[in-house]
Image (cartoon, rainbow, N blue to C red; front, side, top):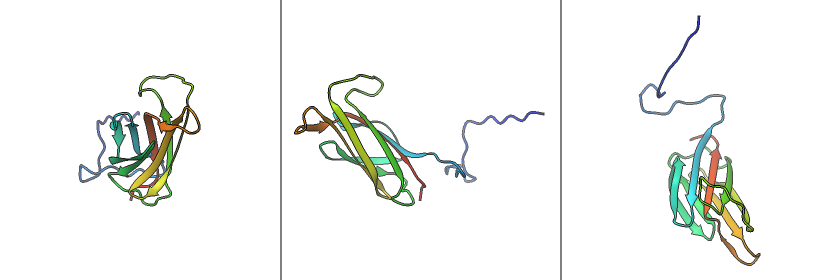
Length: 131
């Protein structure tokens, strides 16, 4: 005999809270950010973004994480999301947990060593435990 479970949504007993995943790791937040116009084309569990300086931002969580030792990975691109291109510029990004309520990231593209610039299109993935 075969069992089939077809659902459109799974919620906690109260009908609105998220279901707790056990023995699994899942993305707890992500952000796609556009430094060229301070836009947020896509995000999850991000309440706001603060553009701190050239290439630097804080991403504040809607729901905090349990500790500031969560993992953050990032990437950057000189072209808009949904397209791919290669350029002569070197790009790099660094990101880390800052507090349980936000993470910190810096994304740059460098034409020359003395001229760091915003890398226009960036994204971050955050993995950790929610508070």
